[in-house]
Amino acid sequence: MKKLVLVALAAAVAVIAGKKVQAGKQEQALWAEATDNVGKA
Image 1 (cartoon, rainbow, N blue to C red):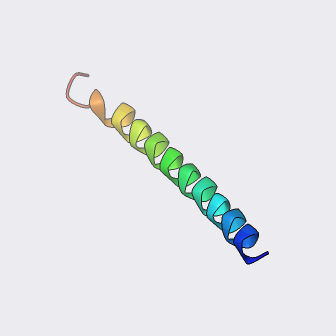
Image 2 (image 1 turned 90 degrees about the horizontal axis):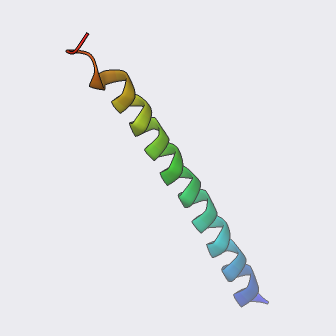
């Protein structure tokens, strides 16, 4: 029973970490888009 709980907990942590990584990538892409053309206008 403990192993099942640990596996479920590890899976939940992996999903949350994956979402945070994806959100960070989206944030970085947004900043890159906003600042790439600053000097070219």
